[in-house]
Length: 212
Ligand SMILES: Nc1ncnc2c1ncn2[C@@H]1O[C@H](COP(=O)(O)OP(=O)(O)O)[C@@H](O)[C@H]1O
Ligand SMILES: [Mg+2]
Image (cartoon, rainbow, N blue to C red; front, side, top):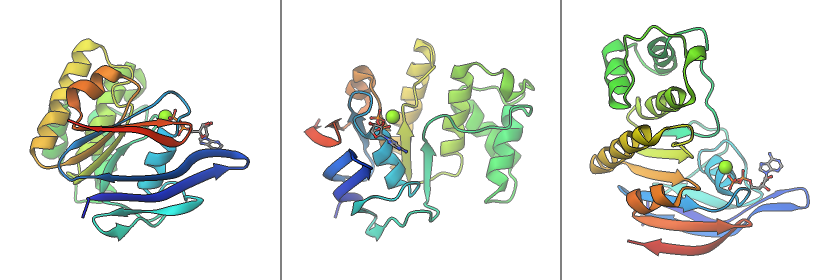
């Protein structure tokens, strides 16, 4: 059984079909790339996978369980720009978000910030962060609860070359730990260096699927 099974997934917005009978399987412990030009349906697919959006028809199973829209899933996600509290520091933001579901653990948040290349002692408010720093903080919030599955929509956006290289290493380490990662990107290079499988979407349809 595949870890993620997508069966005949369709999403319509009025007359417009964003996903058109997409069926896919993703194995555990690998990095799966999803590629496709703007508007091909990558974000809509990830939103349905994490239960943010209800499909028009079809089904998603993760670890054998049907994803129910609106129900909390055990996964880390970056989809579009995540919201942070702009007038607080990065560490305070992570402490707050972590505290929603867990007992506070400041040391853990400090560690996770270091993992993504942020200084936990930097008191700068998130509102003054560069796009690259925000993106690193977004990755930190996605991984801090140690979820088995990560859905990352364009996680390299706004990072300089050095940042991209660091985040690639972080993702490879997470794969070594057995995490499953779905990575939507329009960067063919990220996909080429990181991904074990590559799925290409176009106009809501799967047009190719390759395995390394
Ligand atoms: N909430 C929405 N309402 C209407 N159309 C939408 C909505 N979300 C996405 N779409 C449309 O669905 C298509 C796929 O979008 P999206 O998944 O965001 O593409 P990608 O992430 O591959 O760039 C696009 O044509 C987009 O305009
Ligand atoms: Mg998108």
